[in-house]
Length: 295
Ligand SMILES: Nc1nc2c(ncn2[C@@H]2O[C@H](COP(=O)(O)OP(=O)(O)OP(=O)(O)O)[C@@H](O)[C@H]2O)c(=O)[nH]1
Ligand SMILES: [Mg+2]
Image (cartoon, rainbow, N blue to C red; front, side, top):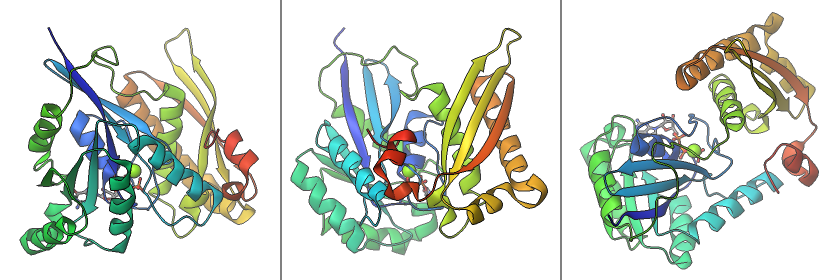
């Protein structure tokens, strides 16, 4: 049987709902999401199997005007992804409206040359008028093959979008064994889940300053998964915030993360978190490398 397959970049400015959309498209959690911009820091693959076809969606960091070395590196990651795919989903946020940031993404994306489907997301929050305005605005900034209104949160329109993507895939091999959901190694995914729970509780500049690395990942003989992770922040003041009064915050984060890891991995988990300061890591090349955020 001939199969169809391909790589699909999911791109857009920060916080428009790219990661939520990738999870909805593949029908399971592969990428963390949060209300804070710049949540995604690497190209995460989410794999969709349908009869006769496999689609590899590549979630990307929000494309933005960088202020730090990390920010520049994140934009490099996005450009590397969209220059080498069969299709790009350009996602905009109908609730926030289409603006200059989206225009910059569209311009650089189209220069890269992949065909584009434009996804107008968050229609549940935008309402009819907001959705119509976003569709009109985005038609002016990007020359797409389709313009598809969806809600990644409620699932509205996602089935249609999935069909439009699958029918555009060229003939090709299965890149992953059927049933594979993501390319992320489990210790990396676990660190991301810890970061997601932290982001939900942090404000101001703290979310940007948090990085999580799995230090030890032990599949014990008794079936328990024993995980030791380190939460890095940039300053002592942030360390105090992350730990919380009497350790309350980091404890709650640990419980939430453990519960979700147990659900997703289907086994018992012991999770140990430590908090460390890695001064100004967002601005230092060596620190980015050590934290696995740059090569
Ligand atoms: N109301 C509504 N909210 C949504 C929808 N899709 C995503 N969101 C919310 O928008 C916020 C950002 O979602 P993410 O999926 O993390 O956005 P992103 O584009 O991946 O963000 P970055 O990784 O930071 O670039 C989260 O609070 C989501 O719950 C949607 O369809 N409707
Ligand atoms: Mg994201």
